[in-house]
Image (cartoon, rainbow, N blue to C red; front, side, top):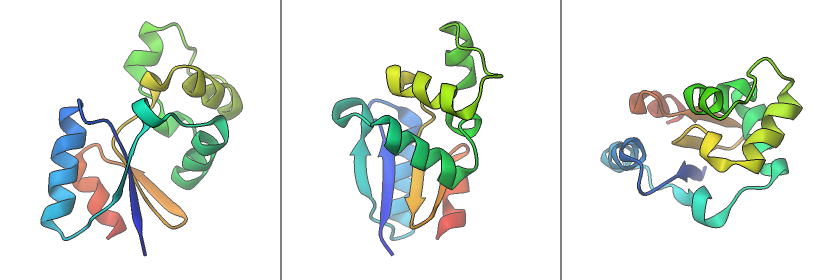
Length: 111
């Protein structure tokens, strides 16, 4: 099964996570979401695979930008779609499952 990695090349955690995946012979399709963008539908699908929108939002960044974290999943997804810097990274996707790579070793659970 193919892997996809929601990835930002300027993020050191993403770079380290990709290196870890390569060490385990995982060659994901890279999705540079800051350059390519993600639609609200794509973000909702990622949230569904992980379990909630709250799990994919960068809490500290959201608070700094005035985003209330106790909103519905739909509202959080809309906030992320409006400002992609709110999206956690890296996120590894395999089929119907996804996981936030924090710590990066967590991604190996999808192997």
